[in-house]
Amino acid sequence: MFLVVAAVALVGALGLVNLLLSIGVIRRLRQHTELLENRPRSADDDVPASAVPVGTSVGAFRATSTRGAEVVFDASAERLLVAFVSPDCSPCRKRLPLLLDHLAQNPDVRALAVVIEEGGAEADMVAQLEPTVSVVVQPWEGELPRLFDIQGTPSFITVENGVVTATSVFAPGRGGAALSVVAG
Image 1: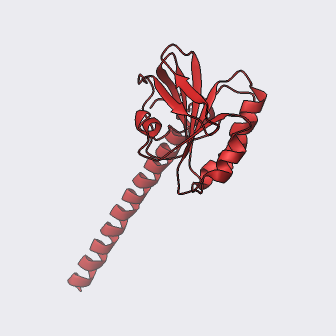
Image 2 (image 1 turned 120 degrees about the vertical axis):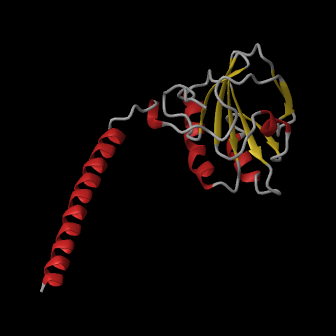
Image 3 (image 1 turned 30 degrees about the horizontal axis):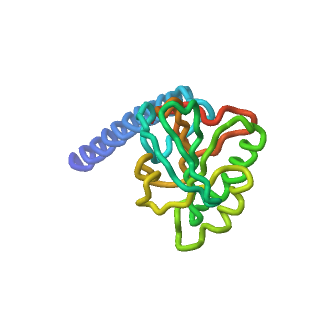
């Protein structure tokens, strides 16, 4: 009889310890949820692009557009929005109309679209971009993807006076700035 009482007491004690631990975990989860809900957000809760970090100096470059024009960028150029997109990238295709709409509503924005070469699959994307923006087609190993250290697409980068001032995976919004500034 003594063993039965001891076993019941032990099971009761373990149940009480389990209850106390569960209450502690629930309290901590509530605190964690509150911390997440009250965290500071960047503009539009943007996400940095897979590219050079904000504050990086970008050297001068030259490239030839799909229309045969030479595209020149140097450190004295005031502001440039560079959009890196790839034809096999579903988010790129979804953000392309947003980029085109932004450029149509903000004709003063100087922009360059770099389409990653994918064995001829880039023709449709180039055709969509060409009426609005200068387009350069380069492979992943090309000069511009290497210069901006592009690791994935889409990547939208704002360069001002030769320095990266913003990076994003989201296309610019209607009427807004080219990109919100996000720590890289």
